[in-house]
Length: 315
Image (cartoon, rainbow, N blue to C red; front, side, top):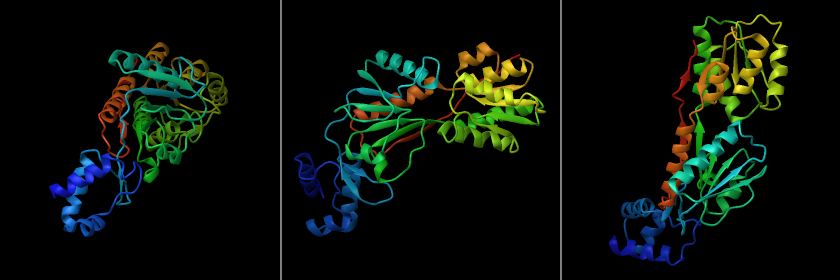
């Protein structure tokens, strides 16, 4: 077995098997080198653990590992980020942490993720992307807070997402404790990952809640929706994002039961109860995955869910 392994490692290191291409099956290795199927399987497992191969989910095939692990980060964010929105706050937290850790980084903006930088780990937020394109470059990247399909095309793409489902559910329970029965929800932009998951969690508590979507996450859109609820017989509202909470509070007053997800400082300033976005946990997880990749870990597509821990309550 040792002789065969050394031969395979030599082939991988000299480029006989190119990164990204299908590797020999257990049966083919057994026939080629005159070993049993079980021995071939153990060889494949060892080479995978040592980073020479990738195990492709759901396909049973293997792909030769990458030659160069990332030694820096590209922060690839949507052009429309603001200092006080999700993208802007996440970017600020990441930049602070990367500088503190001594990890080199660059920040690029655009509506779509267009190109890789060799030897860099791309962290993508709020941009259009094509998983087939991400996998074809044979470089690792990380998608933040988006739904990510499984399969061959996601082998080189990691993901860190917030558990918006539990955030919506917790906000529902906060309203229930206030005695609310007839409620509405300002859900933000339809079909986004945050909206879809938070809505599902909230509806576990209030299945008959009235749902209002907005074209954007801004205050003006939220204000228009809040105004449309004014004459309805409601005894509580939930908003995704602190802009929605602000709009509801201005429309209904500070005594009206409101819960929200959002940035802790913004919710505190409004004196609104809610579930805070766990910025430090999100950044910790992103840095952890970068460290793993920079150490030449070849495990296919990590999937990480960050649970919120801070529930903001007001007197």
